Amino acid sequence: MSPERVVAFGPGRVNLIGEHTDYNDGLSMPFAIERGVTVTATPADRFVVDARDFGERDEFSEPERADGWRAFARGMVAELRAAGFDVAPAHLEIAGDLPQGSGLSSSAALESALALALLGRVPEDLKALAQLCSRVENDWVGAETGLLDQLASLMSEAEHVLRIDFRSLEVRPFPLDLGGWTLVTVESGATHSHAGSGYNQRRAECRAACQALGIASLRDADDLSALDGTLLKRARHVVSENARVDATAAALDAHDLEAVGRLLDASHASLRDDYEASVPEVEATVERCKAAGAAGARMVGGGFGGSVLALLPPGVVRPAGALTVAPHGPARLL
Ligand code: GAF
Image 1 (tube, rainbow, N blue to C red):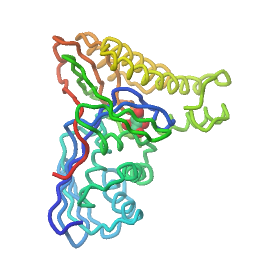
Image 2 (spheres, rainbow, N blue to C red):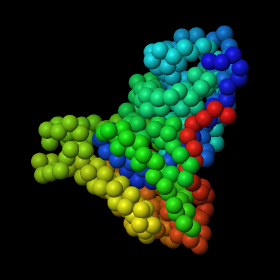
Image 3 (spheres, rainbow, N blue to C red):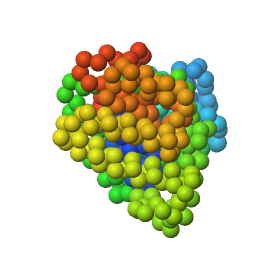
């Protein structure tokens, strides 16, 4: 770290479409939003981490295991060092305007801000950094999440969604031209944590479906007839969601936002019925958005709570509590 004070910002993300596809070698279309997490680092004798938003502190010299929010900074120091980076002790102050557990990826926002603050620079290989952030979440925090949120937080571009192919790891910016339409998120009021939700169980079910089909990943699945029950439903969601990402790209190309709305609705129905990742608060929020005139509305992120993303045609009044979201730039030093 440079001897001076470093301030780093990591944005949260919204995923336009392509949910629970990242750990299945599939397709997604996320973008970074304006809100996120800021980490201020100043040199110190040992690591002191202040979580300003909830008034808690962690202190350590060498990173050992810890629960909850403490696992992030400890894991980040350990993983950066394991990757060969020189990370000096620092006082880290964390603050943000992204509600925790809202499904807008406060975790990846924190990870990318911590990484840049501890490094004091933006490294060249952002995909490798995304993978490192993901290891922090998998191995230290205990959530078996994929790479979606970290790639979105670290590689987004203003006015673009990222079209990500998780098999090739190709990340391609794709213009998001909504004309007079707007995207909003509405918190359902049910907060979630990946480590404590059904998320890890869904991953295990996808692995079991692959085993039953004799394939390496659900990206390779075409014939699902060997499956039934729960595994059939999980695999059907992943296969149909990948197709919806392609269809959304085509609809955006054709400036057909009504079609994008229908695809958001179909994504939600699949997440609710096949992936069984919804909860009553999310259902009520989707209904509220649709009743307000949204062309499409769906749960965003891992589910089991969190926020709903809605696409509003021109002239539709934003539902109460809605936050307008648009693609912003990636994690950066301020
Ligand atoms: C969460 C995870 F962190 C992502 O990796 C992704 O799986 C997403 O849920 C669902 O698409 O945000």
